[in-house]
View 1 (cartoon, rainbow, N blue to C red):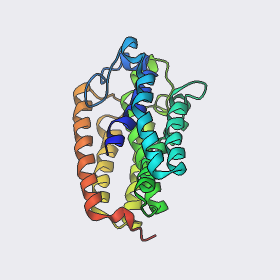
View 2: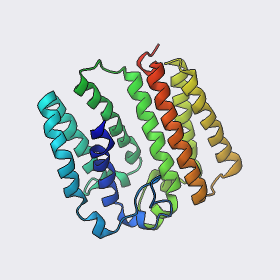
View 3: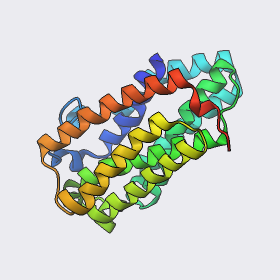
View 4: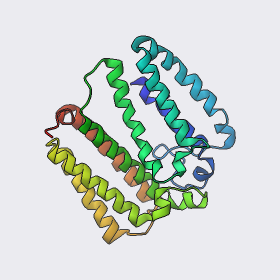
Length: 247
């Protein structure tokens, strides 16, 4: 838990901020604990070195207790973040691959399975988790269209526009809801995503459409998303439904 909470997050978001200085500097929603830091070049210069120092002891420790497979898994986490952030790859600006590579978040499940010698998760669970990661990333892109454009950053949302990106997100939400109902019979989590889908449909076709959100609205959404994430984690741990697909 300690490793995933800080060192792994520092790897992911430290390198992300290190390579997004220009876009973050003009992004009004950044610079707080909800949406992340807005740092200067001087503050970010030493981040890669600090990431290495923070994560290396954990790589050594986990490799000693879990073997070569764990080392390769941790190495894969690092490689994915390098490919995502750094040239000549910089997948974060190669739509739609910047969405697809979010599957890297699911590696944390493999990490837990390998470390704790647990039974493999069903492939249906990994598919659902991947779709959820895609949808979560798209939500951030929607809020960042204007600063990304000004910074010359290419994302799927910048290219296809706000309304089309919301429709893409809505399709993913509906697919996730379908999977939860018919593959896992989890009507509670499906109901939550169904309500979210209904709100997004109203957002797309009635309320906001192509309009951007205000900072206050973004912060409200941020609090709501964090609260819903905590509640959904509690429910998933309590119910265990994602461990028992019926399809």
